[in-house]
Length: 141
Image (cartoon, rainbow, N blue to C red; front, top):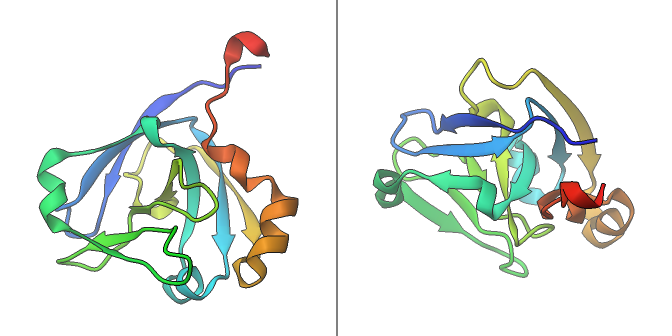
C-alpha cells in the first residue's frame, strides 16, 4: 500500500534556512533523549536524503556540531540557533526533519515514538528506526 507523498516546506525561525522535503502528510516522528536532542527538545521524522532539498541561499547560514562518534551532524542556524534538520546517527543516509519546523498546513498527523538515545545501541536495534531513511520500492509491495 503506497502512501501519498507531498512537498513540505520549512526552515528555521529567522527563515534564513529554508528547505523542501518530500514525505507523506502523516509521519512518524521520534522523540529522542540523547544528550543533544533532550536539551533541545527535538522531535523529528526521518526521510531518505534524496527526499530533502536545502535552498542554495541557506548554506551560508548553517553551522554543524558533532560529538561522540561524530556520525550525527547537528546542523543549526548561525543567526537564530534553530535546528530545523540534521543528519542523525541512526540514519546517516537520511535527514531528520524537526516536525515543528515544517510550515503549517501540510502535516496532517504526527505519531510520536520514543527513541532511547541515552541507551543508543539497544534502542537502535529494537525500534526499527534505521528503516526510515530507506527508499521503499512500491513495485515490490
